[in-house]
Length: 150
Length: 64
Image (cartoon, rainbow over all chains, first blue to last red):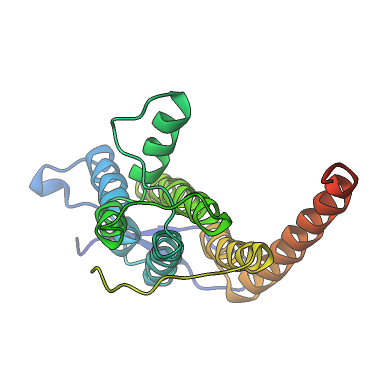
């Protein structure tokens, strides 16, 4: 992990460094990209942290955590795999996108969701937003690890 | 965890929370230089506000 790849940087700024996987340990760039992508999904921001993108890692972690925490605090619906229709399944997929925050959100609602009030409905949307945002961030970490411009 | 505080926000407050958090996340993910990030965050936040309030006005006649 000591090797650094120099990437083209905008004029007037220093070259940007992205850590490169140690090929001697048998990990190809593609494998490293999958590791970063999956890590970023499971723990928001970890995919960027593995690549030493600290600012992005902290922002993704806080953003996903804040949205998921607010959604659960508002008693939003945390979908399970026992959904009865396609919308429940889509909601479950979106909620799963938050990675470990999904379990946190479920633990924050021991009495279940309350969508009989507007707050619960807003919370449901915030939880889904957190999941989709984290999936986007994980995809970004995956692409960055593959050496694409990020 | 059963004593976790319940959060009650209005529709507009949730909208502002969403716009602020998503703008910051997009700014950091989409731009590298701090100056570009700040410009992107402010611009996307203003667009979120404009589009959200604009849609609310368009939908207002159908809300009652």
